[in-house]
Image (cartoon, rainbow, N blue to C red; front, top):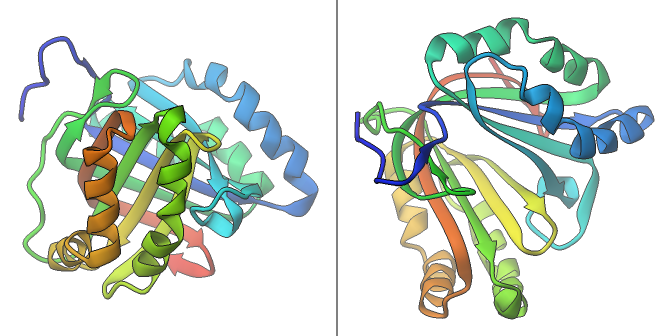
Length: 237
């Protein structure tokens, strides 16, 4: 296990990501989760870090928000507590009852650079030599740089969706415009790295860091332990 940087609190070593697309008749229930879900999350055993996330239109990365798609990012202190949540949480049962699509992904952290709300993930696994890998990129965008950041978004999103080896790509965020994240599933580390070095994405990252676009950022990689459910029409078992 790699120790956390001094002064950085733990966001957990096992992560559960919940992606949900609510039924049209459950839209208001879903919107209420964005406001109220943080309090029920505090009662979950072993949960060290949590974020309730919105999504872009149709799960994308643009400025237009989705009315029905949301996500949860949950960092647990142990695999046992993460599995207890996935297998038996009434909170997750409620999401399933209101969803037309729902996908639950359990992950072990392979690498983490940066922080999210002052917390960082604990590394307890190695990047897989073969098989799938997950990437999370999130950032708090400085208001003075928001226009420049979003100007780069269309080309970067297009290159992501057409990248060889990408199995899932979803845009999520804590707040419109300024607190955004990208969650991607790749068939291999090689495919993920090839995209990271691609033109539009590499240009966007270099411009963002060179221009001081972010007040805080985190880049994390994970090995999937379990992927179950349906997302954007694709079934995972």
